[in-house]
Image 1 (spheres, helix red, strand yellow):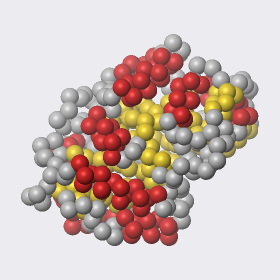
Image 2: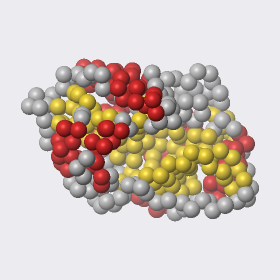
Image 3: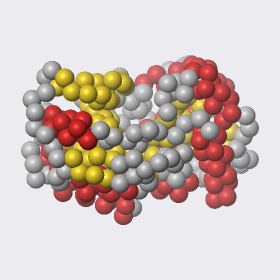
Image 4: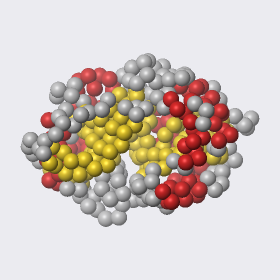
Length: 340
């Protein structure tokens, strides 16, 4: 998706209000969205620039963020979902999902269905997936994403944020976990196999891949070599202190220099790269935490978690709602806890 495509996508989304109780936000709505943000998070939200005058409006003006707001019959903002559009990427992201703790929705179930039918239909003409990270302290948001956004759980991110507090939900100052979810907007054509590392993680990763459709999962025996990894795409989120890198090959051994939340994506299309890359990552203290589907190739997501028992204990503090989500976490923790 080029910059022109991203601009065209923003225009297509905002061409009309999806339902009578929803509309796209503009610069004049910034104070209302900031009030909603404070009602949900107080002053603890990690993206500090969203509180500043013009912080949200500048993103709307650039076209990198479009914001869908739900309003009640009195014209008050009840909830919000942001869609982040990335030039040069084959996906969009859903984020800044907020529900006011004290205002009631006026939308019917049919309106929610109609709203997301419109949004997902427009997105599907431009990108293959809609990714999101949903706080595991917010089970309602998880259920909503599954019911209306057709989002499937694809993994976890351990200690995703620090210092955030959700008002109206029993939480603490401990790090907040994230449930990674994705909506498949354009099912992949063809059935190329996915190569996953043989061993204790194979079944857990294969179950996630099975929920996304596509080709079979094949086991790649892990090779323990003292080589390094060559990275391509790299994303850095300063608000979360989160890095996301994509492995494109192996090379001379180098230090990985992990971030606070360090995520490495290992593409599954090349059996040799999976076998060798998995060995390097395991030795460096990385653990599989999920799958990241792509338009042409999926990737295993690894997170730097050298103290695995501590990571499991931290993730276990989250409120995990829904049997599928509980099973996802249970399967991960059973494989992660015995090793250190």
